[in-house]
Length: 131
Image 1 (cartoon, helix red, strand yellow):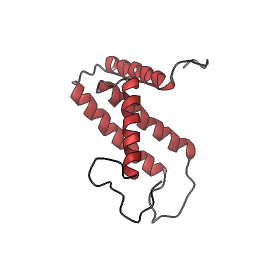
Image 2: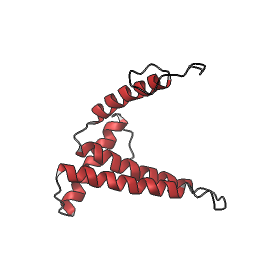
Image 3: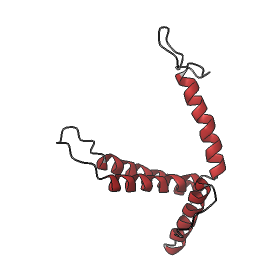
Image 4: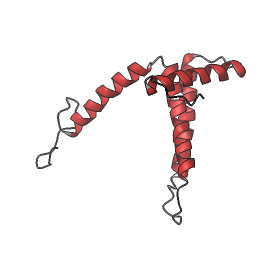
């Protein structure tokens, strides 16, 4: 990748790069799955990569503590991002749409924690402190 500073939106750049990588892999390996199959395959790969994140973070509390290899942990997290972005693209979501949906969901999540959500099950119990 070119090391020059890019002025574009970073999320747009990631979407563009992932779309290019996915197209390259599909062509190089002659893969022709349906849109639904691609979304499912990316979701499965994402779950496997998440398991690798958990492994790198040493989830086994019954073992002796050991230092986390931060470089490996971060690499696994980036692998998760690769498949997440590919899943977004395969589902027809643009970087702008991801951002918009995230912003709405983030607000809703704060509203839920503050007892302001219209969705059942998030009311703040009496006596609980609100932010």
